[in-house]
Length: 377
Ligand SMILES: Nc1ncnc2c1ncn2[C@@H]1O[C@H](COP(=O)(O)OP(=O)(O)OP(=O)(O)O)[C@@H](O)[C@H]1O
Image (cartoon, rainbow, N blue to C red; front, side, top):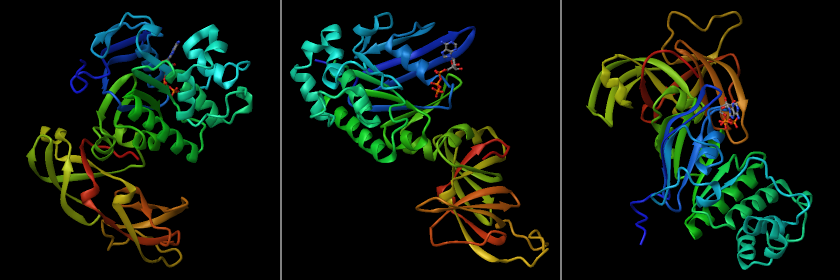
């Protein structure tokens, strides 16, 4: 019997692919357990689609290994891997109806006969497509087309499903529905899933684990919570949401690798903050990652016309409100400070006048310290 605890549904390591002399993937390793999901996030051109195609066997590898349930399938053809792929554009056959499109996954050219297959019916039911059997693709909404495409892949009962930007072009409501349906499929069938996106909300909200890819290399892997709270670099932090970076001096370091704390001063606050192990290498200069929710602003007063906000009595935590941006359920305040410009998340009620001076409150418990210098937002 298969030991599902010990053997991941999919494991790949050392994956490398060069295209036109350019390394598009270099030493990529990942694994996904039965019934779990992995989201690959990375900027455009980072190699996400190339990685999926390599795992599916659609393109050759220069090196590396792909194992499904512990079996080495690196050289197996795509249809012998137990891996199905849903492409970015819902590539349905325009002259086949919904049931035939789904049955195509089973019967290829015989899809007209296979449309009555019990498994086609069950898959349609699970994905909320019952009743749409006879519709042609052009008679469906974008979200329905996505689900038909998904059903066509799932009807083959793959061990692993690869999804390329599955939620692109779906509105918020449809994204939530689609993510819920994917989760139900994982729970019911144990299918392992990998999906790629460059959308941080989708990456954080719809997967068990996250892999951050940049220039064909893995920057970090972990749970969405951990990668978001403790990114390994400023690049990872910025990919997962709005980030302020403040240059700070480290007064003291305590703890051990994996549980390091540093004492810092910034924006009027002094205290201990969780720190990246790279700080152990000795640099006293560091960058404090401050997410917009780790800051609060309060109004200090309007400036008299012509009065500069930088006066002799400027405090570290005083700034000038440059801009207020309405975001629907919260506000963003852009504040210029002695340490650079920061973005603050504020509650809706806290409307401030642009051009006024504000005081900032930093919540150090919500911050993360990275080694190195240089501001970037
Ligand atoms: N067939 C090809 N010929 C030449 N270059 C290619 C080919 N396929 C991919 N590339 C290059 O490889 C790099 C990675 O492409 P890939 O499509 O995997 O990125 P991606 O992260 O999926 O991007 P996006 O988010 O824009 O879809 C890009 O620089 C791309 O131009």
